[in-house]
Image (cartoon, rainbow, N blue to C red; front, side, top):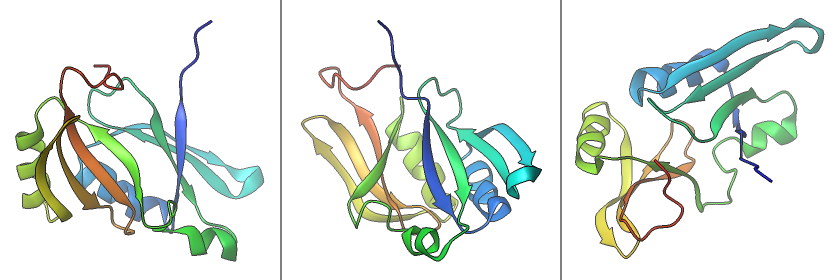
Length: 138
């Protein structure tokens, strides 16, 4: 049996604003942006450059409950983990682009990591896993 995590839904306030951040600031790739007229929305998927794992489905909030979840999808915990093969390259690039880091780089048992906020306030780990980190699959 083979299974994989394909998409993670991230609730956003505006598709284009989210695309500007994920593509323009973080350098993600646009995988798909397809109108879904019957539901009055778009199917918008992005992924990290060269990424082979799960992609992000940018889901524009359409109810008050969904709007309340924007920026707090993990109740203040780190929500998403962005793996990299070169921590310092990406850390410096993101800092130069204005990404806000709330925890500075730190050497942890599982790798080098720093925590940043996306444009909505969701927390992300930027991490270069060490060789013993089993969740890292290039």
